[in-house]
Amino acid sequence: MIRVLIATALLTLPTPSPVDPVDIAEPAIVSVSVTWHGWVRDKQTGEVFGGAKGYEVKASCPGAVINPAGYVVTTSSCIHSGVDGGSGALFDAAIKDLAKVGRIGDPSAARKTLAERAVAEGPAPDRSLGRVVKVDRDNATVVDLLAPADGDIAVLWIPRSGLPSVEVGAAGPIHTMRDGLALDAQGRLLGLAHHNGRVAQAHLVNGLMRDIKPALGTHDRNYRTGLERYYAGDYDSAVDYFTAAAADSPTHVHAAEFRDKAIAKGGAPSSGHDLMTLLAYILGAVTLIAGGLGVWLVRRRAAAERHAPLQPSLTP
Image 1 (tube, one colour):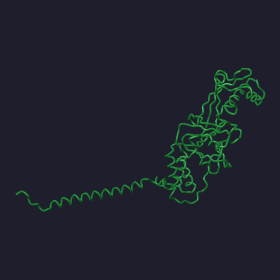
Image 2 (image 1 turned 135 degrees about the horizontal axis):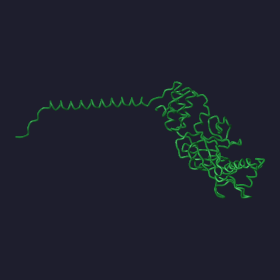
Image 3 (image 1 turned 90 degrees about the vertical axis):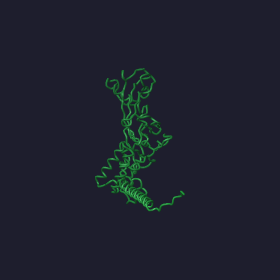
Image 4 (image 1 turned 90 degrees about the horizontal axis):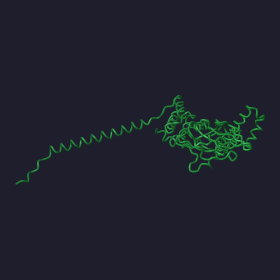
């Protein structure tokens, strides 16, 4: 792993080929899902829709890890309980029920009416909706958010660390879209798309995170360097960097995949055994020399004792 530790400072490589920004960002892309549970009550008539069990509605939205300590950015409209989020999802469920029994003719008009005079709530009046937020398979906590009308950005946290992360970029031209994420040419996250076509600006997340800010881990930097080496055709070095990234971040499956690709193209990992072998030889030589010197000294002392002249007795 020597090359992984010193290559950045010592290696001078040709200008690498352009790295695909999707390859840079993709390891950090996650699936955010929200399950809403509740009832819809008409505040004018008191009628409650949802039956005995209420409505359960699931929604999904784009997300990306922005700090290896488990911090994720997504759209607040996905997890917000207002009419653009959970309440609206329950209104839509109620409209479907009403349409089935012929109580509404124009779903759009009915949706507007419900938004004006109905409320989505929990098992009792004025109780909050039930909400379960997940990032992939982990339950997530909402750290903070900007309402959909104020920026449509939210920060979540999951109890995991060492996650692959994406760098958050400032506002700029969008190079490509991937799974609802807007990326620039360097693979930085510029925004997150909502189902209505809007793109929330990712840099707004900086105002929501207090003690911990968006950041990359050592494994992220090793992975990016590995991509540069890979696209430049330096497959040996790429293998080392991908191996280091995968070792530091066991969930970094993309690092492992690119390592296998680099090996398939002829890349071979450098081995720390080279240095260890050299050190072993040096240590062995030092041991042999020290041991030989010790034996020589012992023999010399014994020989000196054998040939030493007898000392005269001092006894009269």
